[in-house]
Amino acid sequence: MRTYRTLGEIRADIDRNQLTLVDLVKSYLQNIEDTSHLNIFLEVFEDEALAKAKDIESKLKSGTSGRLAGMVIALKDNICYAGHKVSAASNILEGFESLYSATVTKRLLAEDAIIIGRVNCDEFAMGASNENSAKGLVKNPVNPERVPGGSSGGSAAAVAANCCLVALGSDTGGSIRQPAAFCGVVGLKPTYGRVSRHGLIAFASSFDQIGPISQSVEDSALVLEVMAGHDSFDTTSSKLRVDKYSEYSDFKPLKIGYIEECLTNSAIDDEVKKTTEQLIERLKTKGHAVEPVHIEELKYLVPTYYVITTAEASSNLSRYDGIHYGYRSDASEDIDSTYRLSRSAGFGPEVKRRIMLGTFVLSAGYYDAYYAKAQKVRRVIKNRTEQLFEEYDLLLSPTTPTPAFPIGSNTNDPIKMYLEDIFTVHANLVGTPAISLPLSTHPESALPIGVQFMAKKFDEKLLLDFSHNLMQSAALKK
Ligand code: GLN
Image (cartoon, rainbow, N blue to C red):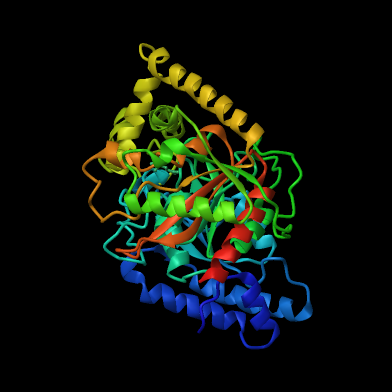
């Protein structure tokens, strides 16, 4: 079967009677099996997906189908789906089944999406390589010796390996955009509050957002349009009107600032730098005004992010106590040993490291020095970014300093791993939307390189219009 890159292509072939939805699902199931060595899927909802395909096929025939009919989606294993297991790739949630569906899951299903399975990720979404999963690491479909990125590594790999059309990820500090960049697909982190977090297993609640990973900007736009909007179950979800992201406006010259500190950063790979510079020139010839801008605070972004997110995580993860959810240690004797033994055995090393770090920065003696200070820095960065957006429509940077790194190369050095997030945490600290686009590949390794665009809060429409246009002109050039 041919590889479909957009829902539009699938629907066109169904309309022409050249494709049935059941055959499409079967071919994804086959691809899942053929790529099982990459360890992408934690569970495949085979029978359910096939039954749904039949059902939606007849809705398509009778003209009663939803907007996502024909779209096959994988869920990151931290997004709840009623009656299905969810584990955040952690042993502490062993055997746990969701009692309710996340709002995003409900909204996708209501528009006739088919959910084909749940995919691997870093434990509790903490990581940048998918090597922190208690369910084993994921390999990058482009080059299986490389990591797929994280924490939504399974989601990006599933789309890149053609195991589904779209996958949902979550992004706290780059977890949608970085794996999308590493696997050569599109990844969109919406504005904080654009999409409900109800039913997303919490990592850092003032950062987390759910978003799509797809082959095309069109599909990300459509999925966002379906998922976005107020939800009474999440008081941080915005009541602002949801734009028609899936309807594109014509080309419009924009004012784009590229963050110079990203390109002069010592961590950046030469080729990543070169491609970004080439893109800047291309954008200029297309009629955009592209200028350097400065975020002198760049070096403070990663430390600020790790102080605040670990603080929030230490609080969010206190609910896994060996009593309420999933795993309980057999050796427990009383309440104290139930907590201690269950948490000691249930959490992996990175999660424990973050709980300890978070507890430390919140502790009475250190609160002012770390947590309160980091909040102040967050405010400074927010103000600076908002100032830039008064002048610029978009901010540009590479998504990541390097292409996908070899499996195992960063695992012994958490600080090195944390620095992978240097360009992505910005959008989460300030709450703006950001997208990673697969615009080039490394000339030697052939690994994908992503470029990131950030827009003002709730300016997804402009971000997606621009991205759509850019991807189309890039495709024309090929
Ligand atoms: N790599 C970052 C971290 O480890 C981002 C994770 C995320 O966005 N969920 O925290």
